[in-house]
Length: 111
Image (cartoon, rainbow, N blue to C red):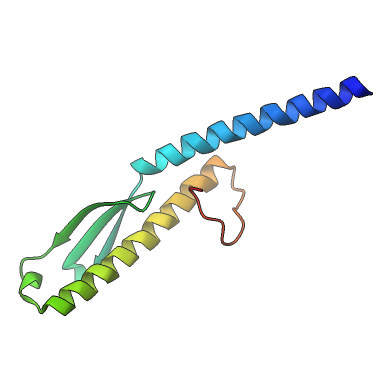
C-alpha cells in the first residue's frame, strides 16, 4: 500500500511540474499577443501586448491641437480600452492552453 501512495504522489508531482511548465510557457507567449484600443473615434490608438504592456501610442495630429485635458482624457480612455482588449485576448489564449477550463472569477493571469 505504501508503494502505491508513493507512486500516486510521484505522478501528482510530475503533473504539477508539467502544468507549471505549461503555465510559464503560456505566460511567455502573452508577449506575442497584441490588442488595439481606440478613443476619440480612432484619433488616439494604443497597442498593448497580453501582459498589458503598452507597445505603441498614436495620436492624430489634429487631436494634438485639442486642449491638454481632453488629450489626457483620451489617453486614459484608450489605455483602458486597450487593456480590456488585451486581457480578453490573453484569457482566450489561456483558455486554449487549459483546454477550455475557465479560470476562477477574479483570477488574474499572469500571476
